[in-house]
Length: 188
Image 1: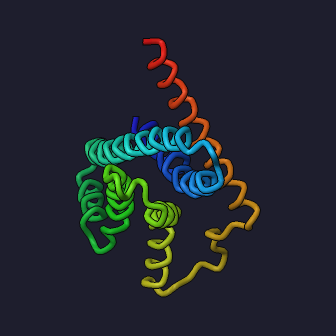
Image 2: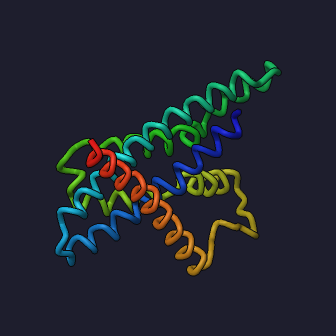
């Protein structure tokens, strides 16, 4: 069960939240040069609502996973170690990124921020920042060693391909939701 929750969390984090970040950049480029601003705004409202909902689901799933992980531990020493990881010297490694992303996504409820080009571009770059990688670097430096074969870096082509796929997946999901909602509204 915990693996399913973790997989859903990763799907939301990797494909939807990061995809929304790049979608925002593509949306504003199309919005500037398009004649059909009304259709684009309607689609964007659906994308923002979907992302807000996904952010809430992400937060609930993350919290559920933490609670289930604690109760699934049988050994008392492992429970203490788990609590120590959540509250110890590297506590920010567990708490910072999920809370950061959840709160950033919930800022999209504010209409001015939702329509702001500068805020959405800053938001999209913040979604790309992975605190997990920063934590690995901080703990490596703190422990006085740096791994010689660090696999944090990908080639430019791999990064571009991954981001393109994430953006396409996000746009396809939102398209299905947007046009499905419009079809339901027209049938009633």
